[in-house]
Length: 493
Figure 1: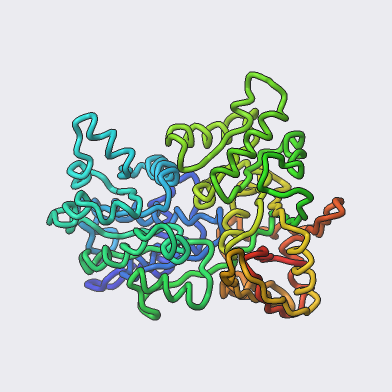
Figure 2: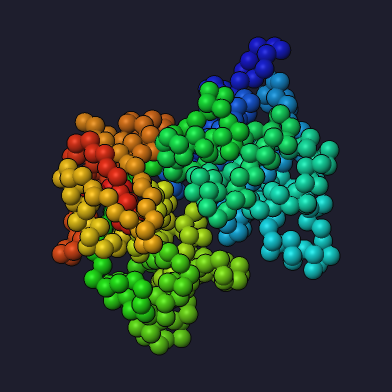
């Protein structure tokens, strides 16, 4: 593989093949080339930021990297010059408790020991007489934390423990786009990430993943929070377009402030597994009552219609995910932002978004909950309900009209979302995310087949517009500003 005395280079054909050989017996899939590329760069000593579509396998960067560290710690002769501690460990930071629990199961399925450390698990541990922070010092390969735990005395004690610092190999942060949106508003704990990295040893690698990294100031801010400098880390950026999901904008005929949601009656009779995004928990409660009253009074009504938010017991949210995945009678989840990131349910057919979006990230993330497994859902949809005025403004923007300035309630100026859509002769480019105009080819056997084409379909409803991702190439370059009072129409036809 390499000359005597030379350090083995993982970013090489030999390195790719070595990883494939090691993980073949441990994973039920073969990693894509873009996943191997990131893992190889990490093993060669570079930090990694990966921007890939929802459902494209962001977790594989962490799983495959950890599998390689564990194997190299046992068999250092596999790669000359590779230095891996005897008991390697990775700290993972996730935005929600539900995502931590779900991802812990993914690591465990790959044979990697994982421990979730959040307010719920720490409380349960104390009741049972266990100090989970001390238990995390040895024998656990992946620690899954919420951002709030990074400033806790328990985590500080862990970093001060010399043997743990020596075995710590990586700090992983999933959904790094939230550093800019949530970190700026109500989750200040996200800002601890940069300080935490500075308190770790120099050999600790940084891994950041997301499907949405807005170019410009948001991207610069996130990289600064993570302590990353351009040119000193490896960036993988792939298109986040979901070609298997139809995007639909429909106009509301009734307001969203009351107890009636007549525009959503169709969901009950559609027979499709649906997630409905509500901006607030209160709105979700009112919608749940409305649908509950309309649904037939059958014994499984509590299974058919469920809520998912931060006020529910964690066990209730966990049960909701299990029912949606495994029970054919579970049809509707009424969720807040806690469901938006990372939740991987393969059989969601429809995502319904009520009201205004704050930024382009939200639309891409919510759309990413639908059709994650094309074998289970052949016609996934993302349906956004907007006011007639917003739809009129959006159509005007597509026609080249300049938007009129508006003010939010209370006299405060509404924030704006700057977006660009560009069409190129062959492939679409979503300029707001600075995505590549061409998709790099993966030579994994299943990726060499011809990609499935996306048909142009239009809704039969009079107050809606429907389009597929492949429609982008029909547009000239459009640059527009959409006020927060409206909606971020990330893919207008």
